[in-house]
Amino acid sequence: MLELTSVSCGYGAFQAVHNLSLSLRPGTITGLLGANGAGKSSTLMCIAGHVQQQGGAIQLDGVDISNLDPTERVRKGIAISPEGRRLFKDLTVQDNLRVGGMVQSAQVFTHDRDRVLALFPRLGERLNSLADNLSGGEQQMLAIGRALMTRPRLIMIDELSLGLMPKVIDLCYQALIQLRREGMTVLLVEQNTERVLKIADDICVLESGSTVWQGSAEAARHDPHLTEAYLGIH
Picture 1: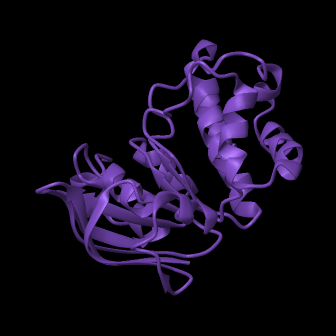
Picture 2: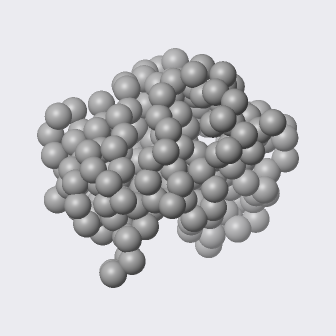
Picture 3: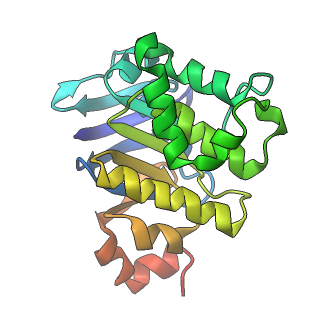
């Protein structure tokens, strides 16, 4: 579905990712793993069009989208729930969802909102609450929900479980399983590597902005060198 070929990206003269190649199969969950500073967030933001691509090609369904602006990429079906969530804190839950749905016609807002609320019922109880008054878990649900309002075929989620209670993490992972069941493709950046290895279909490991390992999650689970050297699992 999505193919990165020798992609480099960065900020001005600084190159955060070097010659990264990555393939995402439709209807799968791919875990993008690595230590802090490995280039994971930069990769997601480059795919979304928010970080300058300095080389290589990004193809969606075989068509190069490297020169498309972020809005056009959203219209093509790419959405991101960024690190830090970046919600509109002074807007309500409903209005944050409305902002996410602005690329779609107003006629489908209620349908799409109700789909998000079915995935995260807690948000239905907080529709008129300001985003700033939500718990960390509720804010994460809202960030994912806002991305889903664009009707994506690929959703990228950066640091899903960071700072969240275990029960909330469980709810978020259950949502990802449901999205995959519905045919959505998921690219997930996550520090909880053991959790990712249990849910993902494929794994890509980055170090210093470059790919050091890529393959199936099953193969990753059975590679002791990989899990010890790069994923911190013993």
